[in-house]
Amino acid sequence: MRFLKEIWRDYFRLDFKEPRQRRRLLFFVTAGAIELLLLSIGGYRMAAFMDTPEFCGEVCHSVMRPEYVAYQNSPHAKVDCVACHIGEGASWLVKSKISGVRQVAAVALNTYSRPIPSPVEELRPARETCEECHWPNKFAGDLVRVRRHFQQDEANTETVNTLVLRVGGGESDVARGIHWHVSARVWYLPLDEKRQDIGWVGVARETGKLEEFVDPSRAGLVTPERLAAEQRPMDCVDCHNRATHVFYSPETLIDAALAQGKIDRALPFIKREGLRALNPASSHLDEAMVRVESIREFYRTSYPKVSQEKPAAIDAAVRQLRQVAELTTFPEMKVGWQTHPVNIGHLQSAGCFRCHGKLVSVSEESKGKVVSSECSVCHYSLPSAPIAPGATPPATRPPAGGPPSIPAIHPTAGCASCHGAGLGGAPKLPDNHTSFTEQACAGCHQKGQPAGVDESATPTAPSQPAIGGLPKVPAVHATSGCAACHQGGLAGAPKFPDSHSGFGEQACAGCHLKAGLGESAPSPTATPSGQAQPVAGGPPNIPAVHPTASCAACHGQGLAGAPKWPDNHASFTEQVCAGCHTKAKS
Image 1 (cartoon, rainbow, N blue to C red):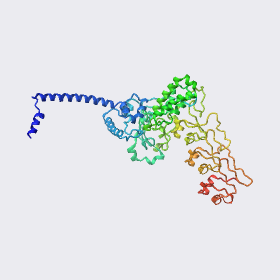
Image 2 (image 1 turned 90 degrees about the vertical axis):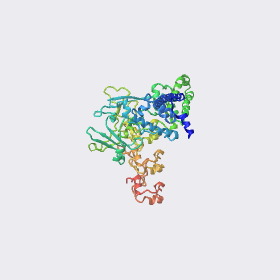
Image 3 (image 1 turned 180 degrees about the horizontal axis):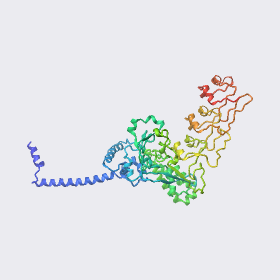
Image 4 (image 1 turned 45 degrees about the vertical axis):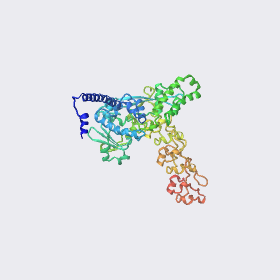
């Protein structure tokens, strides 16, 4: 015990009369003050660094590289990440740091999602961030946008589409145009995580009533409990959902470089060769760079004169295409230009058509009214060339540089079935159209008839393809059980393409129209034996004197000289038989 008292007296007892203790106290006070000063400066600098785009994009480099690269090439490249993802105020700062702890753990444990999921679940409402700079309630009127595209031919032929967007805006009581959606009080119910399937929309009217619209095919999923828990107020990011982290396709980026003169459009086939190098995306960025460099060899072998006369232009094109590769190649995070839906417009994904043309009013005063999907509600096109005074452009002729019209006798369902692979002579979809829905197609390609085609003209035979369309079903041909013959090309029936193998009769009828309206169909031709000849492209007719009951009695086994039916007909009833094999006239 004496020993402990001596230690306490010599080392822990405070006696400022002793010079040694005064020196120790002065040292600790000075060192503590310096440490607090350094910690304050370091903490402030660290907190400031954590708010920079460099911290967000480069510290977790492999995880955030796609978003960081897209951000640097976006209209918001000079805006700090925190301005949109956090905003002002302590509460959202605390929420972001708590969320950041989970993200750090996911990176450390390599459990993060690939790609980063969107939309961001805990993103601050746009009215508290976007509207710090943007003012959607300000009336903007109509805005003109000129879109320039280049074909993949030798001359890189340019087409121009001048589109006028009805942006509009204004305060809620007078708002109109596209920005009405955020000026008004609108709520919606998404039925999926990506908010692409919208089942319900509510609009607060000036009368104080809520006008409700529902997707009839999804009405069973719209319940009062779900509305109370999951409905969302519509704001900027419901349409501008990729305002910054936009992953453009190689075609879009190459078109922009050609339009800006960064790539010399006089280089033969430069658009085509650029797309061949970059679409589809490579499995690694280094591989993409090698493919881009191969363009030099293309000009050396195919266009030696151009290679000798325009080496600087080829070098500039390769440099620009290398930049395009950096903006489109992110295999480590499984990100591409079609990974995330883009809701602004309706080209890459449903966008506007998540509601327009789909939702139907269930309110008494407007019951049955469909949310309009007319193109002119949001935009209209301008001709690229002047029109003579008093002249009216042909109703179905697209403006110069605009999209082709759909022939009047052509269907508007299942576009990708033929145009996806260029089947049946159909023009093949461009690469940037591959994800388009039928609604997106109809949004640009108007129904009509190509200029110079007489709509009253009748095809020479009902089974010939309509002008610009698909083979028609003869008037005496059945439209049920199509796969029975066309699946395997039985009885001389044309075998349908592999892409049609899962189609039902309704899908077939959606494209292959029934002949007969204004068309003359050949009738079965009688033979000396009284047998009816099959119509071209159709199944054999049943002779007039032939019964239509108990078909299987003879045709099941090929008795009495009757043609034995194919194996896939074994379970057919007489009604099924009569659906395809029609009775010949006596």
